[in-house]
Structure formats: C-alpha cells, structure tokens
Length: 253
Image (cartoon, rainbow, N blue to C red):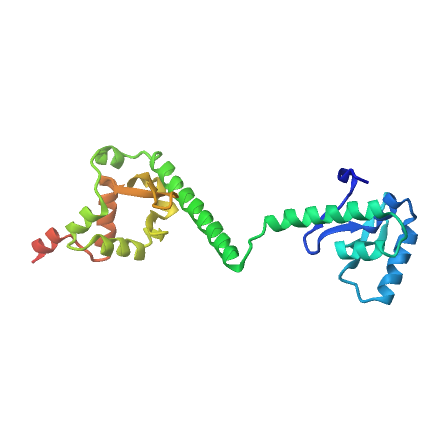
C-alpha cells in the first residue's frame, strides 16, 4: 500500500479528485456488487449524495453498468464502515490530498488574482490577434498585383498619413478617421490596419517595432507608410467623396 503509483484516482472536471467504486472493489479484493450495495446502504441512511455520486460506465462488452464515484470524504466515509485495511485507507487519503494540493496550486488564490489572470489571458490573445493581422498586411504588401499602373507609380519614396493629411489641410487624426469612415482601415489596440481587401494592392509599406515597457514586458507596434500608388488611391477616393486637396481648392477659387 505504500506504492502510491498503483492507486488510481482520477480528476473529474465537476467533482474534483474521485475514485471509482470499481477501483475500490478491485483493490480490496471484493465483488463490485457488494461494494455498490454497501454504498447504497450509506446513501439510504445519510444525505451524502454529494460525496458518493451515482455514475455509469461501459463494460468490456459495451453494456451500460452502474458505479459510484467517491470524493475523498465519500471514500473516507465508506472505508470507516470497513474493519481493518488501515494502510489502504491512509494510502488513498494521502493520494487524494496530493491531487487536491496539485489542483489548488494551479488555481488563483483570490478573486483579485483570478481577475488578473483573466486580464492577462485576454491581453495576450488580443496581442496575438493584432500581430497576426499586422503580419497578414505585411505579407500581402510584399506581393502586390502587377499592372501597368504599378510600373508607372513604382517609387521608393514613402509618405506618412500625416504628410498626406497636410495636403488636405487636416490633421493625421482627421484623415485616419475619414479613411475609417470610407472603409479603408480599422483601428485595433490603438493601431490603424487596412481591411483585408486592400492588403495586396500595394498601397502601403509596413514594418513592426518591438517596444519594451517599464515592467519588462514587450509589445509590437506597426509603422505604416503609404506608397505613391496608395497616395493616388486616397486622392481618387476622397475626390469621389468631394474632398479635395488644398491646392485644387485654390485653383477652383
């Protein structure tokens, strides 16, 4: 009984550590029917249905059979009704304690810790999603569709959204919002990203920078600049919506 590796206790997602009445019968050398009968007598005499739980299993012939799942307290209660087997009792109780301690060490110790763990998980998931979306945009930018217009507009000079905004007499924030309203880009975690239908048009060139925070954690930020083709796209799009650059407004006047 000292070898705890032979003691079969399982972790039930709803009940925690439990042992099957079949296992108890096998290791005590008793018939399972007799063990079930003893457990049913305990259930009839006491309200312990949360400690000794009725369950079912499939036998070797595929038939549904009844069994009971015993929590630590249920197991202890049953064993106290049996004479002897003290080593067996202590070995199982020690094994229950080991499993409970292992499970508790994985759980947050307080509500505050639980909330902190949840927030950390959400932040990690959001960061992974953001990095995934940024990577999609970067990959697509390196594979623009070839066209005659591409060859004409092929230019190594890149411009920021702020530089384009100046052409229209507005701020970068205002132009970003306008492009969002026109379904060009969306904001995620404080960063503007193109919608997927525009990734491979050759409108932008993006790079990522890793930022180290005071607490030692790191995050990535997308640095997006517009190509000359992208600048022309913005011009044509805004013109369709009656938004003209300052120079054209002056000419009209």
